[in-house]
Image (spheres, rainbow, N blue to C red):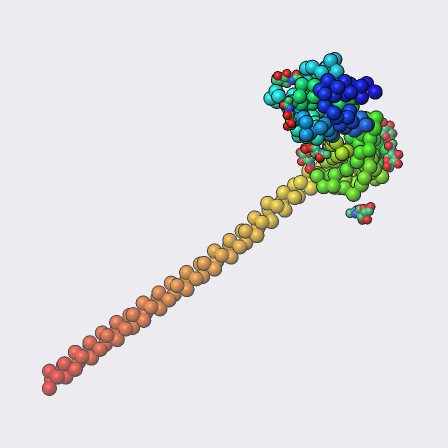
Length: 308
Ligand SMILES: *[C@@H]1O[C@H](CO)[C@@H](O)[C@H](O)[C@H]1NC(C)=O
Ligand SMILES: *[C@@H]1O[C@H](CO)[C@@H](O)[C@H](O)[C@H]1NC(C)=O
Ligand SMILES: *[C@@H]1O[C@H](CO)[C@@H](O)[C@H](O)[C@H]1NC(C)=O
Ligand SMILES: *[C@@H]1O[C@H](CO)[C@@H](O)[C@H](O)[C@H]1NC(C)=O
Ligand SMILES: *[C@@H]1O[C@H](CO)[C@@H](O)[C@H](O)[C@H]1NC(C)=O
Ligand SMILES: *[C@@H]1O[C@H](CO)[C@@H](O)[C@H](O)[C@H]1NC(C)=O
Ligand SMILES: *[C@@H]1O[C@H](CO)[C@@H](O)[C@H](O)[C@H]1NC(C)=O
Ligand SMILES: *[C@@H]1O[C@H](CO)[C@@H](O)[C@H](O)[C@H]1NC(C)=O
């Protein structure tokens, strides 16, 4: 009623024949829930007689800091001043007044209102009552259903994801090591843990306006006989020594044998080469002696000739 009255006064003053229903701002009826450290998009739309007015300033105020009902500063967003902050206007000059708030803190919780100012002096409007924002923590809790101390195989537990807001038409998505799991809902139930359940579990919470995520790491200890914690020291020492022997001694033996064989074969081949040298020398000598013989023969011939 107060709003309608205000609009009527405003329009009377401006002398323009438009109805009070021509001016307005629409917000979500329900409080908006968002996660600390993340962002929220506050949906907002507005309207005014566009043929007679032009919006020249868009403003968002927080009722936490603005005791003046938004008619004066401070504003969390003022389109005329270039404030670099976590409040970002994602709307336009005509009908969309969506506000983004980044890096949310608990003290951002509260009521927010949109105000717009047109080129006509009396053409100003603040949307009542505003929109309520609730900033909460996203918490992943580990609830042990059996066992205590470190997580062991066979233990059972629940991972529970929770955002403490009054309303929640929200969606929970779980993923393990960044791969989405096939479960829905805020609880991830492990009836009996195995070592393979170890990993990073992320709960992603989402609504139409906001989202957030939180990761928890699960480390499940194996209880298999290979676990050296349960073995006496001397067995470990003997096994280690044996292992070292296998790793060091066996390749050494194999290497030595191979080395000896190679040495032997190299020696034999050299001997063969020596033999052939000798053979060649013998051949040469035989040739030499042949030549010598021939020479002898020639000499003999010449002797014969000489004799003739
Ligand atoms: C305001 O803007 C509207 C639309 O652009 C225009 O028709 C009107 O003449 C302007 N009024 C004044 C006072 O500048
Ligand atoms: C918005 O900021 C501008 C520039 O600082 C200032 O001139 C103007 O008065 C502010 N708007 C309101 C409604 O305070
Ligand atoms: C308003 O703007 C936001 C961000 O630009 C967009 O996501 C939203 O769909 C718009 N709303 C409408 C009704 O067009
Ligand atoms: C809100 O809290 C943050 C840190 O948590 C602080 O830096 C900031 O000044 C606070 N804002 C207000 C308006 O109190
Ligand atoms: C751990 O659990 C065992 C058996 O479930 C129980 O006997 C023991 O007292 C528990 N220890 C602690 C510290 O809760
Ligand atoms: C889990 O997260 C920690 C810390 O972010 C990282 O060091 C580790 O590699 C992750 N483990 C897996 C299996 O992704
Ligand atoms: C995922 O869930 C659907 C239905 O809940 C089921 O048919 C499908 O086999 C599941 N897939 C895996 C990989 O568990
Ligand atoms: C653990 O999860 C199961 C399955 O969602 C549920 O039935 C049970 O109530 C939960 N227990 C606790 C203590 O949260």
